[in-house]
Length: 366
Ligand code: CP3
Image (cartoon, rainbow, N blue to C red; front, top):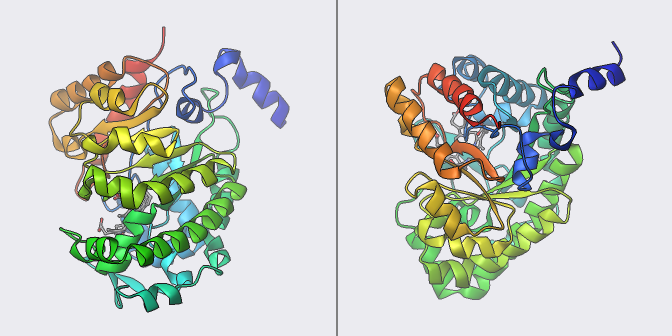
């Protein structure tokens, strides 16, 4: 059967005004036939298929080998029956072409051996080698090719590329790894605002080039992870983070794709985060979805916001929590169902699959 006949056949099932990708449509606040769903960290250690690949490769090997990264991405999306595939990569990959060595230490997370603490070190960071990251674009090409044909229900799976936000990436560079209080990051921010601005600017240059590679390779949407922005007061966010982040959002949107901007513990920042101009704001589970959406404002879409640990609850309670998120969204255009943060190791895979199914069943438009 030729491609044309496939499209004609499948398009019968969806009203013409709802055709395309329900995930991309929701990012743009257009009407959808049912609420799109995907999960943060949907390919990860909770999934046996991922662990089978992980036994033979380190995390960085998976990221840097397009065939393997594509396979991991595709397997997770198909196993869960979700509406979008997020490329398997890591936030910290751009550190390498910038000249900053890091590794993932088992059980500890990322470690940067020589954290960035001085003006000289910031000046030495390189911004001219982003093309070395193009293994991620090669993986996206494979994923986009795999998901190019519309699925049985006529919908096209969305392809998500991603980058870190300048604040969250700077915090890993400066702290040398994960942090509780961000003392070194804030010390640099407060004490040497000119060097902080230079670091933000260098990250911006690399991140825009990296996002451009991903869009050119077939990413439909770019998600910007500002995972740790919730550590900032509203004033610090506004003075030290909002300008570079707004510029990043604007330049990624200029590539022709919608932007999802995500952070954790951000209830008090949402009304300021919306000033970045992002198309979609990610909500964590600490804020009820309708309240978070009110803070984000009527002109953005929202993504969220089930507690990832609710995936450990008995079926009745889990389904109840899924329903509460959907009820709070009330089928308004511009809701993408997700978790408030990533799936954690040990999460029962069947519960994740059930949630994806329930979201579809409970949100189908009349
Ligand atoms: O399915 C997907 O979500 C795509 C894959 C993905 C990974 N990292 C692979 C990964 C994504 C989207 C990321 C983004 C990322 N990386 C973030 C932002 C997301 C968030 O959680 O807010 C951050 C902060 C990082 C940096 C990072 N990578 C940390 C702090 C850790 C250690 C924490 C942990 O879970 O162990 C990683 C490791 C990592 N990146 C894993 C995966 C699947 C798990 C470790 C492994 O397989 O060895």
